[in-house]
Amino acid sequence: MNNRKKILIDCDPGHDDMMAIMLASASKEVELAGVTTVAGNQTGDKTFRNACQVLTLIKDNAPVARGSDKPLVRELLTAPQFHGQTGLDGADLPPVGIKPLDVHAADFIIMTLEQSREKMVLVPTGPLTNIALALIKAPRIKEKVERIVLMGGGMHDSNVTPAAEYNIYVDPEAAKVVFESGVPITMVGLDVTNRAIMTPEDIEALTVPGGKVSDVVVPLLRFFARANKDIFGLPGAPLHDALAVAAVIEPGIVETKHLHVAVETAGELTRGMTLVDFYGVTKQKPNVDVALELDARRFVSMMTAAIEKLNRKLG
Ligand code: BDR
Ligand code: CA
Figure 1 (tube, protein in one colour):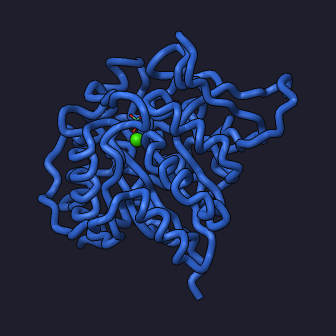
Figure 2 (cartoon, protein in one colour):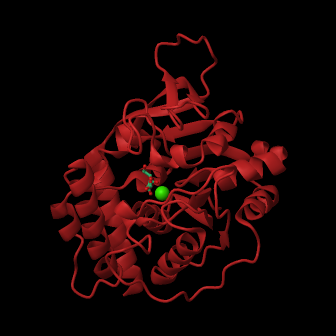
Figure 3 (spheres, rainbow, N blue to C red):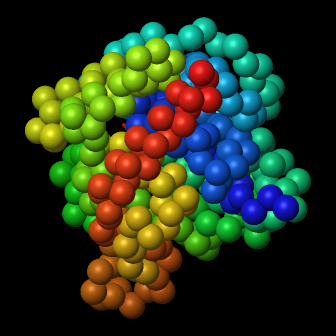
């Protein structure tokens, strides 16, 4: 019997989104039941192509569906300063060799959940547009979602404004729909993901002669590490999105606290802020498991093992 947890990754690749897909693909604890894409780090056509190229590279035949090209009500803000003009600058990926589905990501998510006998885990690693659309269009799917383990937000840390993390900032209205949905949520935010770092040494250690995956991943991560060093002074590549997948595979990798989290959509200076009520001052019922601590070395060894496994798979 197959005991693997079924997950859907909704992403905007992006270097760390790519690592999230790779970690899931290599894991025997989860089954990657689909990949959906959203505009975010780059435009919708680029994030979609990147996801298809990543799956082509690692020879994973999970179904792929393209989703929203812009946030629910706002204009898109991309992040070329971290991910380059292609969204995956730093190395060439193979041309797309898979056939994506001809269905919108939100409909694919609805269909997949409805057809699944067991509950599934959604892992959004980009702006929450597709997930919000699916929940708005078919609220009945909530009962098929075991949990949403998302990369986004933060209690203290931010990266777009002093108040907000990128994924929530880009589509705060969508984030509000998701956070208020009543579905169990784990928020893997910047407080932990900024410490989920592969140092330049960790990155170089992935290299093996003839490694078909590491040959591509290592230069990509060098690019991402350099951008994060130049912009934030971080000591390596923070694999934000991959930590969300790691938290599904091994929930103990992060320590969480069950707290109320609200999303700011209207604030003049605080658009996209995730307000974490750590002291319970609002008396609102907790709705999110907020990740506050992580086992960073364990995370790096999971990532390293995943890339080694994919190298071996491709021979
Ligand atoms: C998030 O923003 C994106 O640039 C990354 O892919 C990640 O999902 C980090 O704030
Ligand atoms: Ca992302």
